[in-house]
Amino acid sequence: MPAITLYHAPPSRSSIVLWMLEELGEPYDIKLISLSKGDNMKPDYLAINPMGKVPAIKHGDTAITEVAAICTFLADEYPKAKLNIPVGAPGRGVYLKWLFFGPSVIEPAMTDRAFPRKEAPRAAAIGWRDFGIVLDIVAKPLAKGPWLMGEQFTAADVVIGSGLRYGMMFKMIPERKEFTDYVARFAARPAAQRAEQKDKELSAASA
Ligand SMILES: N[C@@H](CCC(=O)N[C@@H](CS)C(=O)NCC(=O)O)C(=O)O
Image (cartoon, rainbow, N blue to C red):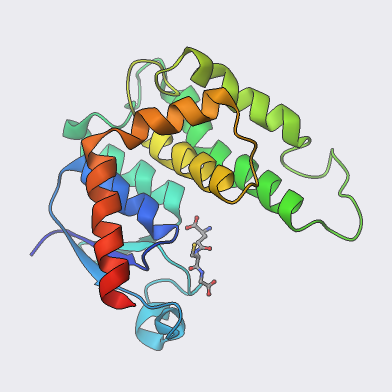
C-alpha cells in the first residue's frame, strides 16, 4: 500500500497536490471527497481535516493539511525528485518565502479584491499591503525565469503557479506576460499534463 493518500475533490485546491504528486513520482492512492455531497463534513473526513477542506494527505498515520504545507513536506520528505531546496543550501530561505507567499499574500490579496470588504482594510494591518505591488514582486523572478528559483523547478512553482493560473482563469489576476508565459512553461511539463488528465477523468467519473 502506498505511503501517501491524497484526499481529493477534482477540480479544487487538492488538484495542486495532485500535480505535486505527479512531479514527485512516488506511488500514491487517491480517496475522492465529494464536496457537493458533503463528504468533507462527515465525521470520517473531519477526523483527518477538522476544517472540512481539501486537500489533505495521509502519510503513514499522519494527516497533513494545507496545500503549501503538504507541498513543502513532500518536497523535503522525497528529496530524490529535487523539488526542494534543502536546509543548509543558499536558496532555502527564498524558497520558503515563495511557499508562504502563495497562501499568505497572493491568495488573500486576490480574494479580498474579488470579495471587497465593507470598509477598506488598513494597508499596514493586512499581510499583503497593495495588490499591484504583490503582482510586481512575483513577476520579477518570473521575467527572468524559467522558474521562481531560477533554473530549478521547485514545490514553490507548484504552489505559486497554481494560484496564478487559477487567478487568471477567474479574472482575479491580470494576464501579464510574465504570468502567461510562466503558465505556458509549466503546463508543458509532463507531470502537469498527467495531473490535468487525471483530474479531468476523476471529475467526469465523479459527476
Ligand atoms: N487553506 C486551505 C484552503 C483549502 C480550501 O479552501 N479548499 C476548498 C476547495 S478549493 C474546500 O475544501 N472547500 C469546501 C468547503 O469549504 O466546504 C489550503 O490551502 O489547503
